[in-house]
Length: 78
Image 1: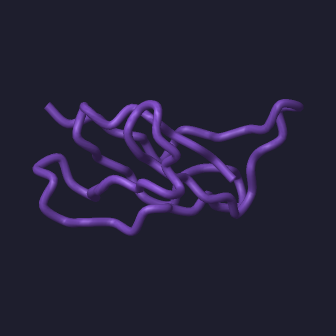
Image 2: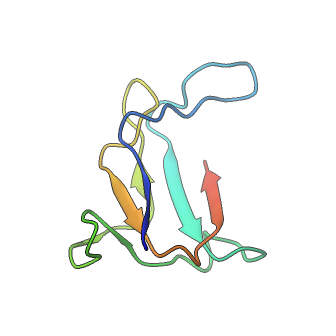
């Protein structure tokens, strides 16, 4: 079963401020997701690929709903 990162999820920094125009990198656990990006998708069936990384908007939210294979466990925001 795929998992998702909802476009309503807001990403914030350690002070609680939104991460504006940030990058969302997704990869395997215990691996650098910047150097080892994994496939992400815009649909539950995992058929429409998205670029990895995805961007955050002016509110710190993902621009797209992100679907991924459950085995992918690492998320990094820059």
